[in-house]
Image (cartoon, rainbow, N blue to C red; front, top):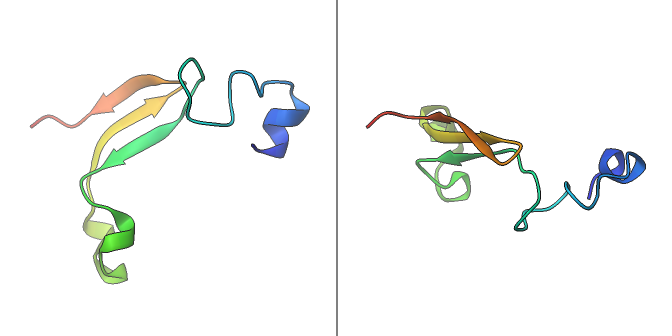
Length: 60
């Protein structure tokens, strides 16, 4: 949990990926831990979520 979440008394709705909590995250087409450093710039974002809501999805 981040200090900002704790000091703003939002730890019940933010700070971890759990059902019912808000979340900001992206879904990538590759695992960044499994690819060479020099290929990271080629990774594509498949979806973006802000506050737990999808705001971007790549068209396939």
